[in-house]
Image 1: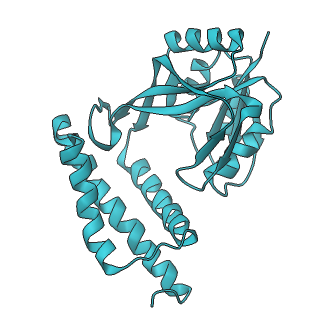
Image 2 (image 1 turned 120 degrees about the vertical axis):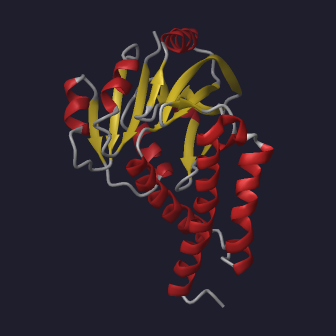
Length: 251
């Protein structure tokens, strides 16, 4: 029978990793790729039967490619530490793997932020490509990494749960990390941090998620997340500006 490995990238995920691994218990193998956590992430994962490999983080694309090299399973599924596979989804995945048809599968995520299910705006339910034959995929990109697949794409019927943020300290840690990585990515692509971008792009970002994507329908948290998306956009362009200033590119 074809084998399935669930691959989990982690960094200081002691609060999440146990529930994540437990939801993936139906898989033949669980592999955790840890970026050097200072908490008990690795110890908890090993105690629950996962195999742990450590690699210094240098971008999500490289980290995902490294994860692929850590298993010889026929199929792989990527799972974030704050995501949970529902029993219905687990059964559907097992059926797909056992059937063995060569395809890559997108899974619908239901996102939760600060204890509330988010239905609109930037955190509305979204499809994410997660399940595929191991040899049919490769990754490129630092932050919003892109998958290159050599098989047709399909969608699964059942959903997974994404408990994206539970406290503001963690939110701002990721906010800072992601805006730095995005600034570097934009710099590598030759983007310029003109003043017009710093001023106007944040307003467009807020308008898009709060009005066009109906973030307002999620009430107070919808406004808060949309407002912080404004600052996220501004911050990445400010970081890009100062990065290019250091490199003498701000002319």
